[in-house]
Every structure is written in structure tokens, then in C-alpha cells.
Image 1 (spheres, rainbow, N blue to C red):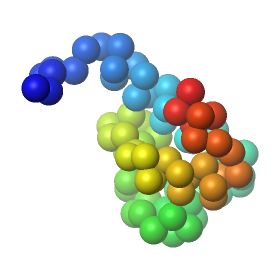
Image 2 (image 1 turned 120 degrees about the vertical axis):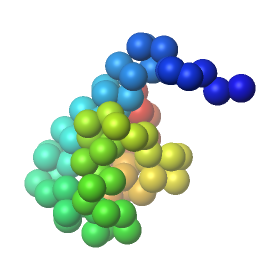
Image 3 (image 1 turned 60 degrees about the vertical axis):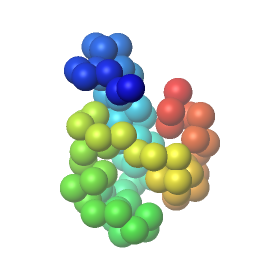
Image 4 (image 1 turned 90 degrees about the vertical axis):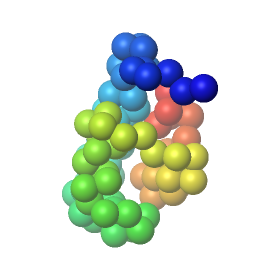
Length: 77
């Protein structure tokens, strides 16, 4: 049974993951469009992840980590 609305700590954690994704993308010198093209996702999806509006699933985290030369753990914290 899903929680609705989500607890505040979940939303804060989602934003933290987004910040890590954005920092890794910038460190790799990629735009949202370039990153999206490399992992087969729309740049709007990258934007939503970075701003905590949505969360990447495990497959997306693996693709992000590989593309950004980091670990899933570093992105997910």
C-alpha cells in the first residue's frame, strides 16, 4: 500500500539524488540533452531527475553511473 502523500524525508532524499546526478553530469561536462541521448532518455527526464520531480529506476541508475563514470552508490548515496 503506497503512502500518499510521501513523507517529507522521501522528497528530500529524492532531491539529494538529483543533486548528485546533476553534479556528476556537470563533472562529465555534459548537457542534459547529451546525457539523455547517451542513455536513451529525453532531456526532460534528466531535468525531472535532477530536480527531484521523478526518480530514476535501477536500470536508469546503472546507465547513468556507467555513462558518468561513477557508481550507482555514489549517485544514490
